[in-house]
Amino acid sequence: MSVDPRRPAAPPLSPTMASRKLQALAFIEIYYARHGVGPSTREISAALNCSTGRAIDAVKKLHREGRIARTPGVPRSIRPISAEEEAMRRLASAGYVVTKAGLPGVPVLDHIPTPHGQEKIESTAAGAARHHRRGPQAENSAPASG
Image (cartoon, rainbow, N blue to C red; front, side, top):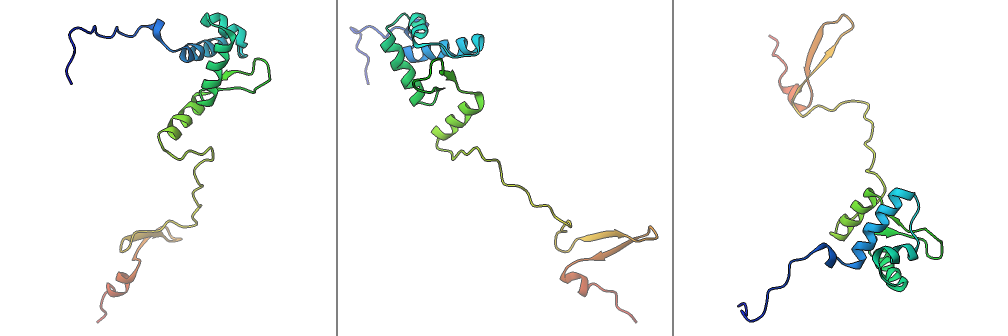
């Protein structure tokens, strides 16, 4: 691919070129952190210097993408999602299976299994230690009497 010298290069990105949707998300996060409730669509449109319709479109896109939570028809119900919800959303979008259920419980054992052929030390009532082998090798390794 060759570069046409007659065509000027694209200008570098600047904060003023950010999408309206991301500007709306940043405003919602700041507003929610300061006030504890979500902003109205009129407040979003005033902050973004756009029409209320464009602000509503940005909010709908953010909700569809799972970047914010809202209840349609309920005033000031727009809120940013938590860090946990954002992490789960990103994992799901990357193809991971994500559930809110925890990991399965670990069963409680009434004994500790030993690997095959290893010695187990048990203490007796007198406090002395007794060694013995577990498994099939224990039968073959008994001392010969004689």
